[in-house]
Image 1 (cartoon, rainbow, N blue to C red):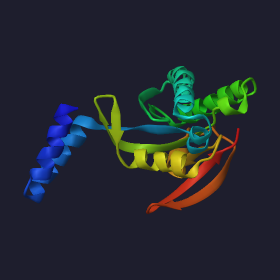
Image 2 (cartoon, rainbow, N blue to C red):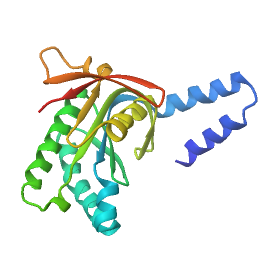
Image 3 (cartoon, helix red, strand yellow):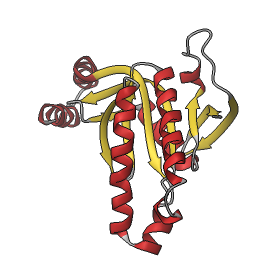
Image 4 (cartoon, rainbow, N blue to C red):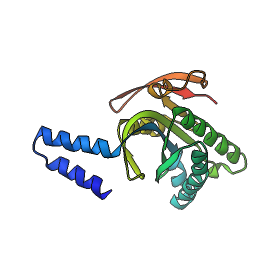
Length: 198
């Protein structure tokens, strides 16, 4: 991360457009990736924390991490990081990201049948595709990261898998998921998306 931070500081100190462009090009050359972003968000943080306390909720967050990571890996994905009650992941294809999101929801649905309500875990998933900066394999930044985050955290509810139309358009011919079309306007973003029904 140190080299990335140094480049950011150099960009901030650059005093000409040409110098800034040169640094920007270097950043994209070194860290630029084009893949599928999946962001997982747990539902019910405020309600459960107020009712049962932060330790209870943090134990559920840890359980979410232990359940989701092997599923993400099984579908060819990589967990970039877990932060609070979110999982930040990347996949080589949109299809794999959607398949993993369905599998994760099915796993939690099955587990929730065996636990009391206060231990049930519900998630939403936001998926987008595009170019982003992947820094040292443990953080990422860019428009598809922001859009996937909006879909999972700000728009999605329990069990939702929301995929941008941009990402859906990249599915191979013959691969289809049952979906309903949605359009969202949030924080200056206009997002055409599909809600996956499983």
